[in-house]
Length: 252
Image (cartoon, rainbow, N blue to C red; front, side, top):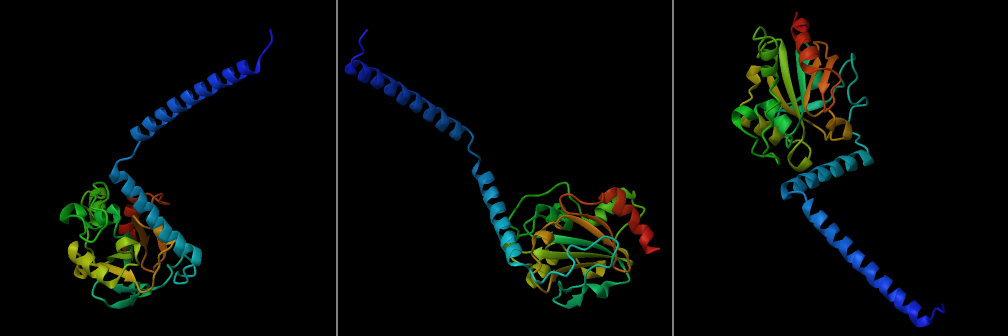
């Protein structure tokens, strides 16, 4: 059978129309799928905020933060790196000046619901200056944790133990300020008379390493040696099984 040019053109025309029709169907289903899988506005806003904070952290890391101690984060079973801090009254002091008492050390990001919970948001509400107004119901102040684990046999405040809360990240990912320390203490009703100090580093200590310390607690003995590290998203040691049981032993 002789194949004519007109026949070929007709066949190609039919094929093209068919492909175009299939393409339109695929585009329609793709559009429907995209619409069906759109994230809620709140979730999108949260993702964008996390990305923004990560850009700040990466920018700090990329240029190198010369304010960090020579060894950072602190190493286990050696003396903690020394650096200057301002307390909630605006007074400057060295970390090394706290030697002689067992220290429960906590690093804070104001926007973190965990940081807020560890300072007592369940009792007094979320910090007014925090970006996130989410209330974390799982994290607790250390005083609550040690009371629960010991069934009330050991409680805070205790003159041999100092709780030190260091605000590294203030509002919008900025360095923690002296105002942050003062207002955080006021909001959560934290008084130095109860052996709790809210402080900020004298210098900007934001970094990927510092961010990894936010949430949880570290335990320093009377010689400021890091004995237990239960800080961060993936802590080295369990808070209730390792850190808490060691506290009474270190004060004796």
